[in-house]
Image (cartoon, rainbow, N blue to C red):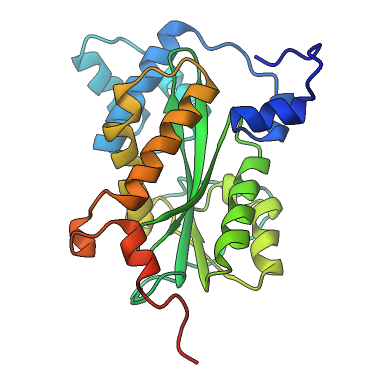
Length: 274
């Protein structure tokens, strides 16, 4: 919680916690311990069965002795920012009035760093409450270029992550996101348009269109997040910072010929030949 009577400015305290300044103005309703426990289990099931909607999750939870109504599960999923992922009728909703861009990666051979970046966000459970993690990932090398935590899904922390990646590594040719309102909002797309970066968006509910980021979330959660019960946003930030540094510098990937993302990112030409 933010003590608004403290002498240290809110912006400075947000920076120390590693969260977006915009997020601290958001006053969220308390989530009960029972709901937090259910949300954590929903998150685990979602990673294993990404196609499961509220009805299937209700039945999966019931088989574990957890009785929860389907509508309540749907409410918790919305709070967590997750949806069943499958090809079918509209499953993700763009921000009202904002453009949905075509998917540009189908049949595209990604052969170098900074050819394609992906942006996504995910739910991170804590001992009491939760935060959202946004990341910018290089598609070729799987390297996490930047990331931010926030207590709300407001656009500021996603824009901060994108701005940092652009400032540190230059601009890619394409940035791929999903069609959710988190990324169709002008706050995000305007940055890409102004930087003259092509925008690609996944097909509706097509989890395979952004499969490398889905794999990243699964790895981060099973190898780090689920092994801890973070007591605060600062604890989560410190732990994730440590893990993502390991992920970039030391964690090998079979798809990268047993190299770590840093090795794949920095040893290959990062721009197309003139």
